Length: 131
Image 1 (cartoon, rainbow, N blue to C red):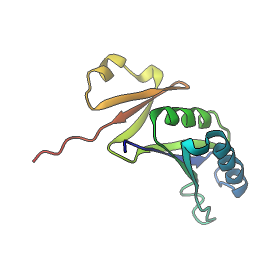
Image 2 (tube, rainbow, N blue to C red):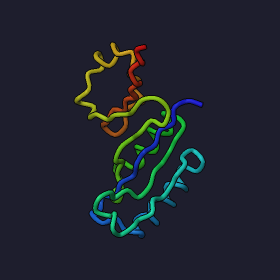
Image 3 (cartoon, one colour):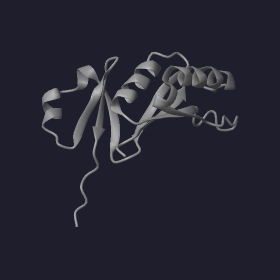
Image 4 (cartoon, rainbow, N blue to C red):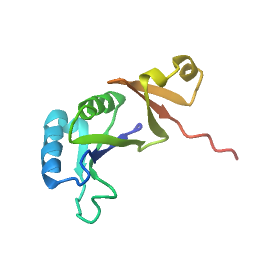
């Protein structure tokens, strides 16, 4: 199996509410069905100020990653906190105007996953181990 991508969904509220989670997660499930593996986080009142994570969405393809990112980006209740590659490497985001495409093209360890709502999503492979 290839690389999977996990988007960490953070609340835009200082104290994420159960109502927010109960609104967002089912709506995403309805929107993406089996294309995204969604998991709600246990909202412990003591952890709310430190984490504000309401759930995760794990996808199997760059296309699904772009779709979920595009759905969440303008959302008023949640935002993408970080994107992790569950296989090899990591994913970073940059504003489209900050990216020099010619520099990206010269790097063998980078793959541009796509441009979504003014952001560029880039997968970075981990450095090779030196024996």
